Every structure is written in structure tokens, then in C-alpha cells.
Image 1: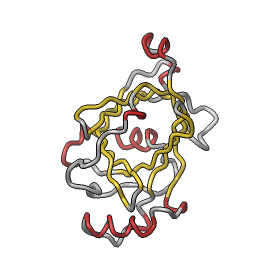
Image 2: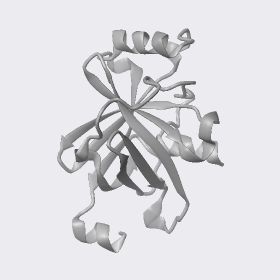
Image 3: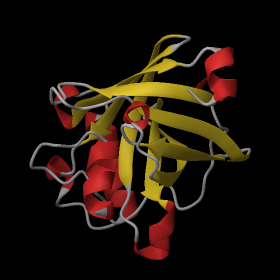
Image 4: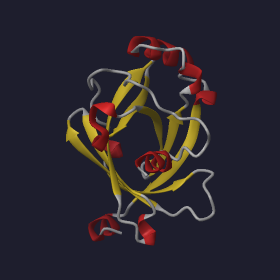
Length: 174
């Protein structure tokens, strides 16, 4: 169930795994982006007809680490929340988020997500495909491989588009 939820949360319904054994940086080095903080409602890109709206809350845990609380299909009455820790890494001048599910602890696999604020209130999330980087067996090797392809659109999968909740909706939990 947790594995399925992680795939849904990242919108990774294609056969690839999108998982890595280590983060891009061993420790967070980049300050949190304040533009990501807040509550969002999200839809999967190229989702299924019955995919519901999910809710996302991004909060700062430390100046360099965030908490992403995800409620799948929240508008349909779902109440299961999955919590991820995330922190940014700068790769060839671009920001990628390192994600892992909090409940898994040291056994958790990492996923890398590129984000783009299309407007201040519209967030696009793309996952990095692990397939092109299977040969990388160390964190430094992985970083080097991703640096070479960071601008290659074929290594990313569009997974979600999110809209920032209005302040009234966020307060009411809608």
C-alpha cells in the first residue's frame, strides 16, 4: 500500500521506478524556497478519469528542509496522509528536490523532483527518471550523470500540476 501510495503521490504510473539509493547531497545545503510553502490542490498530469484532487501542504522544518504532507483524493473524503521530507540540491545551476518518505527512515529510497512555478500560484512537478542513471553506483557518480543531462527534457516526467489554495480555503481545510 505504501509503495502504491508513493507512486501515486509522485504520479508515477508508468513502469519506471523513479527511485534512487541516495540523495544528490548527503546533507541539505540549499535554503528552502519560500514560494513553495503553503497549501496546494493537485491533479496528476495525464491522470486517469477517476483520479481525484489531492491536497498538499508544504512547510519548513528547518531553514534547509521541508515537510510535504500529501492527502490523496482529499476532496473525495480520503484521510490518509503520507509525509515526505524534502530538500533542494543545486545541480548545474538548477534546483532539484530530494524526496523520501518519512515513515521509511533509512530504508527509504529517494526520488528527485524538478519544480517550476508557472505563476506564483501554479506549481508544476516533474520526476527524474531513474533508468538513464542505472550505471551510477555512488552519490557523486549520480550527481555527475544528472549534471550532464539536467537540461534534457527526456529525463523528466510531468507528474502533477498544483494550484495554491486561497487563504480562506486553506484555513477551512478545504
